[in-house]
Image (cartoon, rainbow, N blue to C red; front, side, top):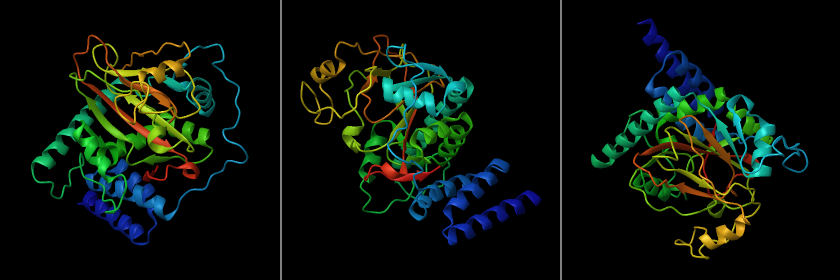
Length: 344
């Protein structure tokens, strides 16, 4: 009875904060309540409040002068994408990795048991999403799949369908996974490193942050830069988090291990789609550098921005599905106009 009363008191306080449009405070309150006494209703309210918080109180940049701040490259003697352990991730290593080498590979950002647990959560979210479609797409109160309500005229809404048709689910549409990930980004130091790199508190993207399962049947993939979809005058970091062994018997990532500072032409040089970078253009941009396909263990992460050239890597011995989560962070002062932000 005491626990029930405490739970109801928690909801009463959260609803009052939301009524007052104090969504940032509601996020802090709901997070604390859920840590103390987990409840699926807290998770669903958190997803809503993270979305509405930015609309009420967009954070201000603390960057003074040109961005990014110059840093000495601790990887100056490394050719290609540098690798570090999770304990070495900070604003300096992240800045140097992205701005000097194109990306930063972080080994063990999550412990393997936690990564495998998240893979199970991705599968649960996908299965619940499939069942929701099959059962008529009515109201859903599942913690694994419950769509965030967006305005009817929201530009990114069509992308939600495309993602779900391709074995994915927006992270925000899985309240339980959203809570898990925001907690992990804080505890792993990833959010702090990104904030230091941006010079301001990062926002998570609704439409670019996705839970994915790539099936073992995939046989083709196209090169791309995400800046081709979002524009180049932004500040971004994608945390591509592997939740299964990738690159040997499951698809991984094939990457061009160098820094590019512009969005390459698309739809030419043998490109299959108008949004993809053709193989001829990849060869030109490489300037003699070979593409590589890193081997990922569960919990490893590759961090890069919207200029990074990559595609799904398909090994010859592919036989298993690949589980991964991509989480795009943007700086509030240089956020893509067509994207929808979430408060962290």
